[in-house]
Structure formats: structure tokens, C-alpha cells
Image (cartoon, rainbow, N blue to C red; front, side, top):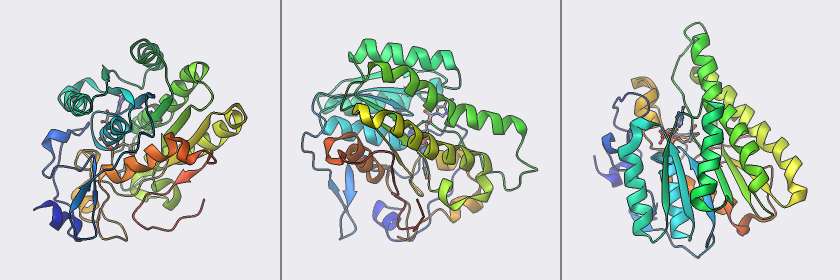
Length: 296
Ligand SMILES: NC(=O)c1ccc[n+]([C@@H]2O[C@H](COP(=O)([O-])OP(=O)(O)OC[C@H]3O[C@@H](n4cnc5c(N)ncnc54)[C@H](O)[C@@H]3O)[C@@H](O)[C@H]2O)c1
């Protein structure tokens, strides 16, 4: 299947991987710094120096939306410090290679963010390597499809919260004392917080918590010149999908646009929220979901 077929309403190729999913094992290469054209192809992202000299801490930066964000940040002039699981070293090295080919720095740090101590180490190391933090993109997540609450183990419930929301709190808490006026935090939520996806009950609950966390934290910091926003993507072509979704979920993995989004199409929203283009926006969520109308 070619990229253009992928855009024209075909369902995604069903494949399976162990969690965490690997970008280099995906059957179709994702788009990181190209965006769909009206003719069904892709065109290169056009940068405008929106993040010149900025320093970004990105979790889950080895692949998917995190990788695309590190790459678009590099196009816009920012250096990144990316965090990922040790298993994902190969993907992380590739993100670094692409970012550095664009003339920006990309520092790598593999660790398990479910540990509070590791989150502290991440912030300490990011400050040391980058020399500051202007942008925190909380993006790492775990999910695993379970169609019924009786199939969803208590351990999975706790692990999903330990991965998806607790590190967002820890990293923000540890980074904020070092963030100055003009700094931004962007939290990756999900459409599932708004539509209540039944086969991802634990994940959906954490994503609802992320939306509320974003609103409360924004209300604490908006008066100090630090903006906090969220994105709520719909289906996006990333390694999370083959690593966590069964055949049925993958076959229906689409949006009202007739396709999942590419990671680049979500990363443009993160660039917007990280840059002064969104200077009047805080506590909000961008619904980059392929056309599903949701409230809030
Ligand atoms: N792909 C989609 O359809 C979709 C839709 C809505 C929201 N999202 C959100 O986008 C974000 C990025 O996911 P993606 O789709 O780009 O997939 P991805 O697999 O590329 O990224 C997820 C990343 O989370 C990181 N991670 C997971 N557990 C971790 C842990 N314990 N410690 C450290 N890192 C850990 C891994 O580095 C992994 O690469 C997630 O927050 C996800 O919920 C994705």
C-alpha cells in the first residue's frame, strides 16, 4: 500500500507489535515534516523561525507525535531533549539524526517515567543539557484495548495512570520553577476524553484527567506569563496503534476525513501552542481529530 492510497480512505494495514511500538517496524513510513496537499500528495512543512533558540523537553520523542514534534521544533529553530523507554533506542537515534540534520541539538534520555525519581532525573538532565526549559511537551502514554471492565485488570488500571497522568504532574512540578515568562506547557490528551471510548476505559480516564489538569494548571500560571494547553488528537498513524489495538480496532481506525492523521498534522498544533502565535490561548484544547465535533 502506498502513502497516497493511505490518504484516500483505505483502512490502515493491520499489524501487531509488542508495546512499546517501534517506528522502524511500521509497514508504512509516517510523515513527520510533510503535510497533505489537495492533490493527494505531501508537501514540505514551511518553517518561519517561530521557536528560534527555544529549548524543549519532549516525552515519548522517539516516535509518532513526539518525533514529529521534535522535527518541526527543529525546523522552527528549537533544540530538544527527548525521553523514551530503553527498548526504543533505535527510533530515538533516528529522531536525533533527523533533528541534527536540520542544524539543531537533540539530547537523548531513556528512562521509565512511571517512577517519580526518574521524572526528577529527566528535568535535572534536561536543564543540564539544554541549559533551560522553555517548552514542556508531555506526550508519553500507555494504552491497551480491553473491551470490558471485567477484562481490565486492576494492575493495568494503575499502570495506565502511572504512565499517562502522574508523570505529566511530576514533570510540570519539577520543570516550572525553571520556566520563565513566555514558557509553555503542552499536554497530549486524546479525543477519547471527549467521546468516552469504551474499549480504552483506563486510557480514556487518564486523558480526561489531563484535560482537567491542563485547565487547573493554566489557571495557576496564566497570570505569571506561562501558558498551559492541550491537544486532543483523533486517530494518528503511530506505533502505538499496532502495539495496543486488536484487529477490529485497527480496521475501524479512521476519522470523518476518511483516514487517520499523520504525526506531522498533530505536531503543527504543538508548534502553534508552543509559539507566540497562540499568545492569547491558555487552558484550552485543540481538537486535531479529523473532523469529529466534540464539546469543550
Ligand atoms: N496515535 C493516536 O491515534 C493517538 C490519538 C490520540 C492521542 N494520542 C496520544 O499521543 C501521544 C503519543 O503517542 P503516539 O501515538 O505518538 O505513539 P508512540 O508509540 O509513538 O508514542 C508513545 C510514547 O510513549 C512513551 N512511553 C510509554 N510508556 C512510557 C514509560 N513508562 N516511560 C517513558 N516513556 C513511555 C514511549 O516512548 C512511546 O514512544 C500519547 O499521549 C497518546 O495518548 C495518540
